[in-house]
Amino acid sequence: MFYLKYRPKVIGEIDNSQVKIMVGKILESSTLPHAFLLVGQKGTGKTSTARIIAKAVNCLNNKFSRLSTSAVGNPPAGGGKTAEVNSYEPCNKCANCQSISLSSFTDVIEMDAASNRGIEEIKSLIRETSFLPMSGGFRVFIIDEAHMITNEGFNALLKTLEEPPKSAIFILATTNIEKLPKTIVSRCLKINFGKANATDIYSMLERIAKGENLDFNKDLLTLIANHSESSFRDAAKILEEINLQRIKTVEDAEKFLGIRGRNDLIKIIEKKDPKKTLSWIKDFSQNGGDFKNLIEDILDQLHNQLLIKNKVIENNDQETNLTISEISLLMKLLIEAYQNLRNTPIDSLPVEIGLVEFYNKVGQNKLV
Ligand SMILES: Nc1ncnc2c1ncn2[C@@H]1O[C@H](COP(=O)(O)OP(=O)(O)O)[C@@H](O)[C@H]1O
Ligand SMILES: [Mg+2]
Ligand SMILES: [Zn+2]
Image: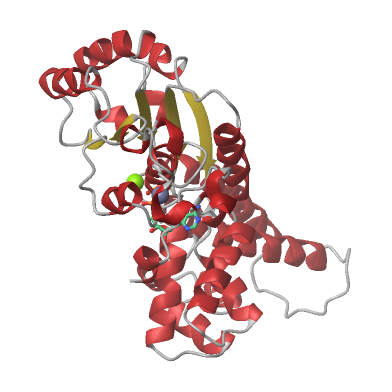
């Protein structure tokens, strides 16, 4: 799987440029925070970054190596690559880095709070923090899905976050910062992963394409980047699928991804056929279509049609048979759908609701 093979292994490979700069600066500075909070949507690199930080501070070949228990009094492992000794990047070669990669390093403890959320689990984690590192410089506690921890669990954790042992570093990751108590948030250094943007995704795709010797053209990579707007993981998966299907052209990729010409949906709407409309949306959604892009596209086109109908601009495009009041109602409902995208549990719902409402109003002949 491309997305696992190309999981960033050093800070420099984190394609989210903002995060890359921020984490670099933190590791460069002389004092490390004792708690990080990584916040962002799925597939934006929280887990990858947490593991890179854990490796960096325990690596035997970088600036942190002198802190490692197993390095005390010893020359740097791996024959003393002096060039790297000042770097904050993990070497990914030393015994510590390798055992962290294999999840067998006793000083890095990963806990998934989605399944270990109670007071007992947190207590036993806290007990672990009192031990000194066995072979690394720090004991790193990675708590994924941290928002799932129970209130009792948070309270127990809070005490430890207030006075953490010097050798412990906590890395909390969450998709949902609103569910974390403010007291916890305020004790952590927050790193915002947000959503992955198309430019950053593009650079990840380029990195994979180079690594795999794929002869993808820029337009194809741009298409994939735009089509998987918020997740690096999704983008890597699409690239892999497209490669497996031996798709080389943008047109074929569009067909494969179900991105049909943006006129398609408008034409169906003109026919006022709810069944066809909903099944188009279902296909679009199943093919991983991006609803934000879709709404932007349709609004752009309706806006054009509105100007054409009012003779503000020349009619170069084909004129729609929707009336002016239908166009403006549709725009209003789609803007509403656009705003609701942020809060919907199912991506397709806002557009579906908007269009169903449109048909209802038009069907009741409230509009001419
Ligand atoms: N910032 C990033 N730069 C490069 N690749 C990334 C990035 N974020 C995620 N990926 C890709 O997505 C996959 C999943 O990332 P992961 O760190 O598990 O995300 P999260 O924990 O935020 O869901 C990684 O294996 C990697 O291929
Ligand atoms: Mg994760
Ligand atoms: Zn190392």
